[in-house]
Every structure is written in C-alpha cells, then in structure tokens.
Image (tube, rainbow, N blue to C red; front, top):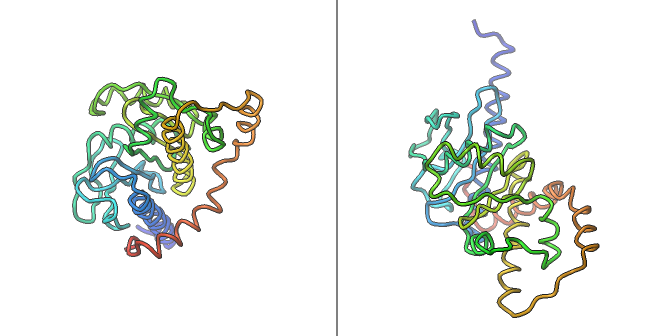
Length: 253
C-alpha cells in the first residue's frame, strides 16, 4: 500500500530528477555552443537522485545541440536502459567510462568526457598539461592521467580508470581526450571549462615558439589557491544558463 509520505517522496525524486535532466541537457547544448562536440560521440552523464544507482546519458545518435531533458536515456549500472524518451541506444564506450566513475566515486554526481581537439592534443603531449597559464595552474592539482588502452569497450578497463582518477576532479585520457567529475552538473562543467581553456591556451602558446615558465613558488601558490575551484560554479553556471537561453533555447523540455 502506497502511503501519502511515499507519494510525496516519489514526487520529490521526480522533481529532483527533472532538475538534473535539465542541467545535463544544458551542459550538452553548452558543449555544442563552445564547439567542443564530436558529432554524436563523447558523453556527459549525471547520477539520478534516489536509491537505484541509475544515471542519465545521451541517446546514441543525437547531436549535442539536439539534446533535451526528456531525450536523455536512464540506464542502470549494468548499462541496461531503464527509461528513454525516444532513442534508447547508448554508446557502449560511453557506458564503460561513465559507469566506472559513477560506480567508483560516490561523490561523482556528474561526469563529462570530450574529444575536443585541443584537449586531445594536450593529452597526447609527452608532458601533458604544463603550467603555462594561470588557468592551467588552477587545474594542475586537480588533474590525473590514464593511459590509452584502445576504444573503451572492455569493462575490465573500469578498474584501472577509476584507480588512475583517484580523488581528482580532472583527468587526461592519454591520446584520447579529457574527463571531469564533480558533485553535480554545474561543478563538473566548470571544471571542464577550466581544463579545456587551459588546453587551448597551451596549444596556442606552444605554436608561438619558446614559452615562459613561472616559478615553482608561483605554481604552488596558485595550486593552493585552486582548492575551491569547483565553488566557482555558483557564479559561472547561472551565467552559462543565461547565455544558453539566448543562444540555444529549448533544452528544458
């Protein structure tokens, strides 16, 4: 028998899920707006509020600027579709990467993975992300690396991926791209923005010739100052939503 309290709890969970759906759809649209998308490939995901260990991910086949809150696919930890708003196919490589982080990190409410050219270029650089800019130095203490093993279809890779991520919020997937994880969509997108901007700056700086490295003291000071980087989402996310509402409305349906 369903009680009034049960019904109220279910309504609260549906409301909380819709909020996450709307934020994740907005993140997909923002990735497209910034030119970081890769046709129908790469993935952003978010944990569904509640006890069922479900998460939301894009339907395989939609371009990022087409994603809406209701089109996102809900899957379980085994990659089985629980609910879809139309297209129900999920990229298996996306499931491998995202399920690894969601299952291995309870604090990972959202996970974002891109193949944007500047991110891939830096992931392939022997030295990885260098402290060539303030933006990069804000990222370095949050960053880890995972070596390329092939297209992420082998579920056994999940153990190594989560081991390499550790407690970090940003990761370079060597020869592949970038990944960020955070408590929610706004925080995770904020990490993604800083990491992508750092990569863009590095590619441009290195194309200009010899670069100027800051002192070790400056690098450490900036690392210390970066510990609250995720909290910048309180300012960045509302501004990003206003930008999106003016450039690509219609995601919250």
